[in-house]
Amino acid sequence: MDNAESAEMYLETIYILSKQSEKVRKTDVSKYMNFAKPSITRGIGLLEKKGLVTVDGAGGITLTAEGKKLAKRIYERHTILTDLFMRLGVDEKTAADDACRIEHYISDTTFSAIKKHLAEKG
Image 1 (cartoon, rainbow, N blue to C red):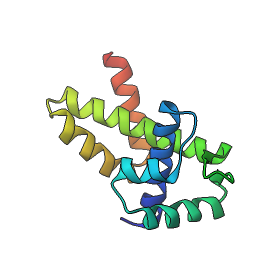
Image 2: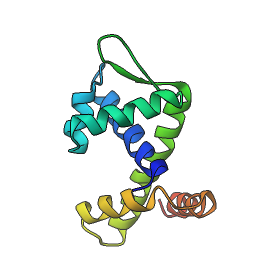
Image 3: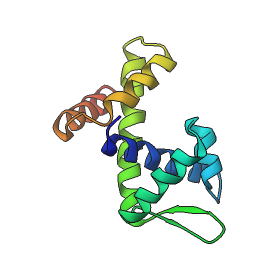
Image 4: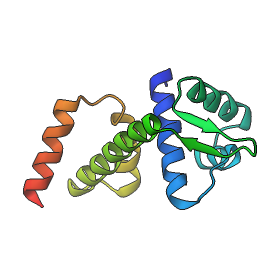
């Protein structure tokens, strides 16, 4: 996993967790991603340096406006690609796993075409 993909995974995870709970902490991210806490601390630190998250004194992680924008983009790709693969007959776990891999590399052009196609097919 390269740095950009890793950052996107963290952002998406924080976004998903923030939809489920008011406060997201490193422990929550660690459990969700099944990563060791030191890895999470390092990853969150890198996101903070890039201005994509803030961490308050109590350890609460919040997406910045830019972080939320990127996280929503990745999450949308994940959910739409998962839906597409399931429509093609792929089981949910495989569809989600494959979407997770592809969401980081698919071009905006191709993704837009997939969204348009799915919207037309209802």
